[in-house]
Amino acid sequence: MKPIRILVADDSLTMRSALVALLGEEHGLQIVGQARDGVEAVQKARALRPDVITMDVNMPRLDGLGATAAIMAESPSRVLMVCQVSEERQLDLSFRAMAAGALEVLPKPGPGPHELRLFGARIAEAVRLMAEVPVVRRHRAFAFHEGPKAHPAGVGAIGIVASTGGPPALTVVLRSLPAGLPAPIFIAQHIAAGFTPGLLRWLGEVSESQVRVGKDGEVPAAGVVYLPPDGCDLEIDPEGIVRTPASNGVHVPNGNRLLHSIAKVYGPRSVGVVLTGMGDDGAQGLLAIHHAGGATYAQDEASCVVFGMPSAARALGATDTLVPVDGIGPLLAGLCARGMKAQ
Image 1 (cartoon, rainbow, N blue to C red):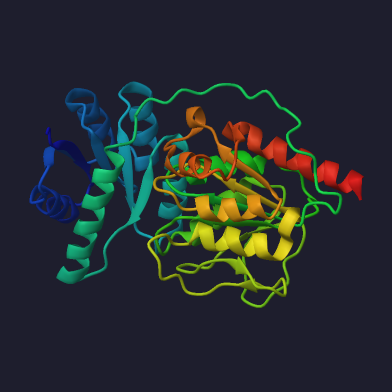
Image 2 (cartoon, rainbow, N blue to C red; image 1 turned 45 degrees about the horizontal axis):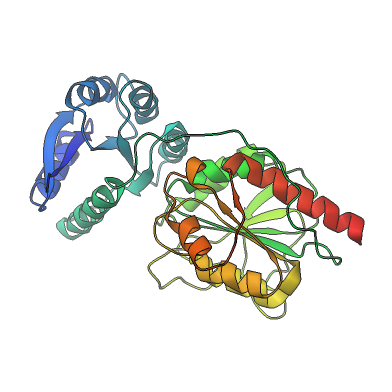
């Protein structure tokens, strides 16, 4: 089996050397080049054609955003962004780099050898996972269709689950939703600790609705988009109150937990969506909404970065409706509008 070929781009000699050492000792991974800035990263990506690039966000001459955009235009590769979560500018650049084609964003390690060792293990795992993602993706236009009829009592809540490739997909969905929806939207986007503030700002820039972090104990408001606090799950309790328990599972936040809670509280007025991502999180929760009589959708393969989660949902029988990412927002808006007319 061929090794996974990696290009390491970071202007810090210390961090670059640490990454080369940590990844170089992992079985099946091969460092094929190093870049000291964004310009060099673009040049070496073109010459070496690596399988995966670890990309620092803040670099001289050309930052990680510009380098990612240039690489995806000239010599597409799988890009993993590495950023300092304590700096707002780096967080914002990381999410913009994901819109340009980066697959994932990981936090830089804290001081100390233990933190560095944990970082090395995490980035090695991410490299192996990302190496399986196709680099070139096909896109197609969406032809809107009516979809299922709204429940006579209207839409009660919308739950959306996403993982790899999710932040850009979420911007597409939220950008096409009008303000004043008659239901709250709850989002479970798998994300590393420290990145929620950046995701909140990024989604808030494109959404006509208010986007905010849910507070434990609050009553959800119609037309508001809720994210869980850092390191927490997001769910609705039997009284219809927002709960944000600490997440203790593999997926943070847990999509199944969110969708199961929506199904229990809102029943046939539930709407569930599973977007791009690896694995099968969200499939069981979407099935619960389906069994409760709610509307269920999953992103189609052609517009996904990774079709794993939508495919799992379809295989489980949670939904038969696969929708291109640019059609999900209009579909949800239409469902809400028809629900309001039915009342």
